[in-house]
Image 1 (spheres, one colour):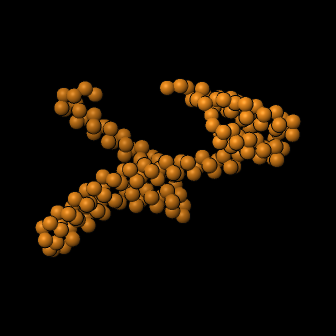
Image 2 (spheres, one colour):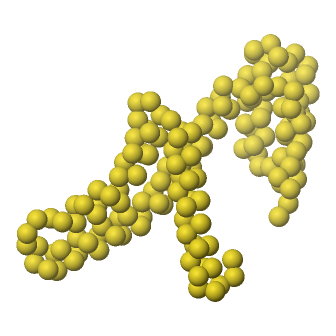
Image 3 (cartoon, one colour):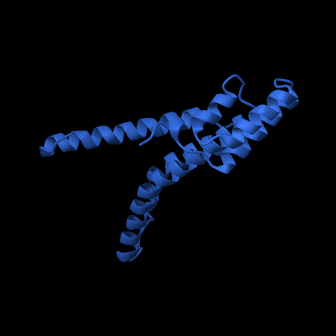
Amino acid sequence: MAEPSQLRVADADREQLAGELREHMVAGRLTQAEFEERVERAYRATTRGELDALRADLPMSPAVLAQALEQRRARLRRRLLQETGGGLAASAVCVAIWLASGASGSFWPIWVIIVTLLPLVRDGWRLVGPDPDIEAVEARLRARRQRTLARERHRARHRGLPR
């Protein structure tokens, strides 16, 4: 795999940088001449490294920060939904068993549903609720992933499989 700075860029990447440079010119960080020269170089750029060099001495603009935050939230939403799949499957199996056994008595699968979906509700609220805490959701997902990997390594060791 190529180094990230050597990856080729698309027209959308060039347009995004031109917009960022325009914001910096309006804010007074670039003169008209510097802006025009950088935009010209941006449209000639072919790699990520060339684009990064044009913004190296400029702070991140609010638009870029907002876009990065939204991309981060979208990634976390996808991860939460992926991790919820197992809980939904276990819940569906329990409901199917309850239905197959005549659906008599109390609805006991509710306990499985609550336990398996509680992390989704808690982390989903922290991600999209009134006071989002993206760092807490990322930390929880990272910790959950580390526990899963540790369990898999432990099982592999006890089965005699290579790590």
